[in-house]
Amino acid sequence: MAKQSSNFKPAGHNKKTAGYYVGKVLINLVLWIFSLSCIFPLFWMGYSSLKLKRQFNADVISIPFKTATLQNYRDILNNADYHLGESMFNSFRTTAISIVLIVLFSFVIGYILSRIRFKLNRPLYIMFLMGMLVPIHSLLVPIYVLFRNLGISNQWYTLLFPYISFGLPMGIFLVEGYVKGIPISLEEAAAIDGSSFSRTLWQIIMPLCRPIMVTVAIIQIFSCWNEFSFALVLIQNTHLQTVPLALTQFKGQFGSDYPLQMTAMLITMSPIVVLYFAFSNQIIKGMVAGAVKG
Amino acid sequence: MLEAIRPKKSVIFLYLLIPVALFIFSVFIPLLTALYFSFFEWKSGQTIYTTVFNGLTNYKTLIGDSIFWKSFGNNIYLVVACIIGQIGLAFVMVLFANSKLAVGKAIHRTFGFFPSTISAVCIGLIWSIIFHSKYGLLNWFVVNVLGGTKQAWLGDANRVMLYVSIPLIWQYIGYYMVILFSAIAGIDQQIFESAEIDGANGFQTAIHITLPMIRSTMLVCLTLCVAGNMKAFDSIWTMTSGGPGYASYVMALYGYTVSFGQSNMGYGSAISIGIFVLSLAVIGGSQALVKRLTRGLED
Image 1 (cartoon, helix red, strand yellow):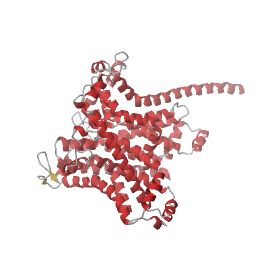
Image 2 (cartoon, rainbow over the protein chains, first blue to last red):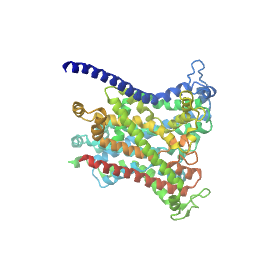
Image 3 (cartoon, one colour):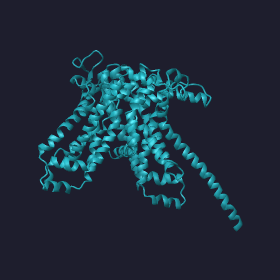
Image 4 (cartoon, each protein chain N blue to C red):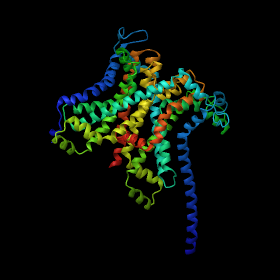
């Protein structure tokens, strides 16, 4: 009996080890296939941008070791018809101004809604909450009609209106929740020392709220840079196109030249890619905080 | 106590004026505009001054419009596909990555999250090339690795919704993974240890311990997933523009086509209101349903 069990044990142990290795291989295989698929397009576009249309159509996957050419980059940078540089400038401008204003407005409103009691406090809070629920695609037609008739569509500042407005609610709720965690005695002490509301707001509260303001900025950078629907209906002037809009022209007009299209995507994606891989931890944390708390 | 820091009313008013006005101007005024014009005939050729009041005609058309309801059905298809695909797969991936057997958890997190930071237009363009009937990567794989024949993936009216939902699912698995990672990290580790001592296997632990413990986070994921797919537009617009025929139309795409493709702003406004009402109903309904279904678990 004793002998039997001593024989059994190593066998059982061996069996477990085999299962352990099978499990380990399977689990890692699934995870790595998924993870690599997520960055594969980046590599694929990277080396395909060094191919010509003819080479790409002959073989979509091969790496052009000997035949690599920068022709696509030259074409895109030299041909003003693609509006790629212009569109990147437009996206930078729209994103930068939107971010600054969203962060400032969210901070001020979030703070006031969190700390100051006044008659319109709850109604305003509910209004922003409802704004978060409005599906943006139900606004495309009316916002087009409204902006067109007021003469404010097709302007450099046109997209600021929807971008700031749709960025505000989440920012406000993040700030509002964050301010609740700051002890109110700080503001009381400041008031007793004779600090005005504005001075307390900007010089005492704002530095404390920096982490949450960074989170708000992170979330909005991506959503402003990538936004497509409002840009599609509000901007017809090719000189005012943002990046996603400029990229869609590669679908129709230059549709069949995929390496060229990939080059354009790679160039316009580069700021986001660099930003992401440089600050991925903060970005992931910020986006998740926004999703869960907002 | 609060009186000490309470500013004058005029100060609050000044601080709130611009952002609140901006918000009302770009969110609520358009909503009212849509509601107003949804009662008018405003087709191509008519200007804003020559619209004709036609009562509930647009809404009657909407209720009988099979393409609109097909689009709505496609939205629901996407919602279901993405709940299973995005949240379901993300949950499995997270369990895998959290197991002691997995190598490189931080890398999976960083790489997996990456596609969700890229614009839907780019994702749509990339997948158009992957799905391309002549030069596509998928056909290359089918021909050279599996030994099959080339297919026009996005040209197949019966399966196009399945194919367009793959990029959507793939793009956001990593996003939900990250949310679930942080939820699971918040569970007391002792619970897992005692489950292990009691002899629970990985599957049992996942179903009976992990899942109930992160129920509220799952509800958040579900809400995000439902809301996200009711507004699907960008990537489908880029991949198929709704085709072939109306096979891959979603509500937003149909509204866009009617309003801008056919210049029928009156009916387009009614569709906008339809999108508004149906989206809210589906989001609210799904939440109520889940709360009802999970209420029993809590007790």
